Length: 408
Image (cartoon, rainbow, N blue to C red; front, side, top):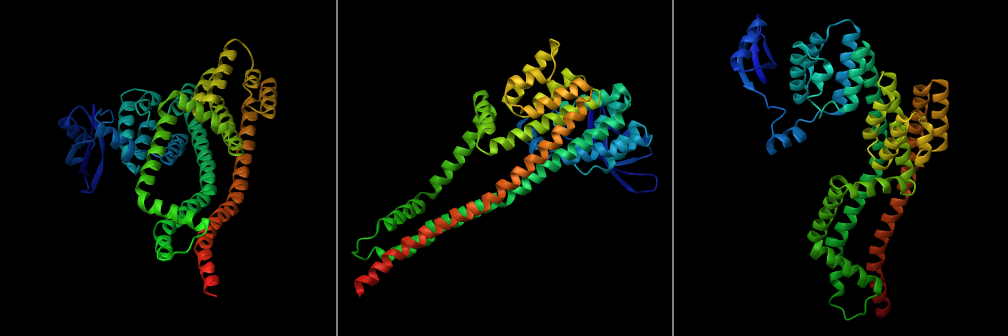
């Protein structure tokens, strides 16, 4: 079954565009005519399973579906199903109004598979780049319990909460990061292009220059002559670091461990990971996913090998009949407050509520810590930049003052 993109005219002569699943172009034309739509142009859409490098790059870079797109689709589907509309017409409506090309093509295939008798979970499982295992497991639980619209609503709430948290973090870090790069660029331009012209006047003098001026001239000459080498080394360093921390098991482990132990920032990373663990586990349990299955999903969601291993250890202990709080205590990663709240939730049968409270508390703490860090970073960066500019100014003015003394 292939996907075809079409341009057609309806009975009133209005142009329509969309996607249709069919074995071939002739079948696609026949399918459209049965819907009282008359095709003008039909082309085969890019197959989502295209193995070529070009196809992979196209899907990964140019046809990516953002988390916001998925969240909006989930919220709208929940609303339509909650209003009593059948699943296939709901998918048709959302497919027509989807603006993302990859999401539109994916929804066309999902709609056709659901229309052929497959479940929504089975239809979505063919698009792992859009619907991750966490999403699919919740949809499966919703279909099994007959509460798919409620589960989709929880999914949308969860996704929106996570996006809100990350947007706040990005907003808080945006100004210091921009300030750092702008300041570094200004100092680099001064050292590489402005300072050599000013210090050039010292070359014709037989005067002994101060040490600070000699250091400035040496650095300036190096930057002017080898700025390209510095850029190459920086790019190579970034590429090597990314390769080590994403493609090698040892590199991933060391980087994830460092992220939890870096002074100040390590605590923030730990709080964000705990909040994500708690919120995801609570959402899964509320949607009817069994605890062991939920723990396996959460292990991949926290995006940290060290914490993931602690969750895996806790899952094995759960299989042996132990509680959740005990194994998490042994990991040494989760604070005592979290352990106590989970233990109380297990004993009172309110584990989901306690996990949501933990998530809310740690999300708030993480945001507060980041705001404090950024408020401290700004004056520190201004001070560092001021020292850099001051070094340049003093290095240039000091020999000039000495020349004035000799003239007198």
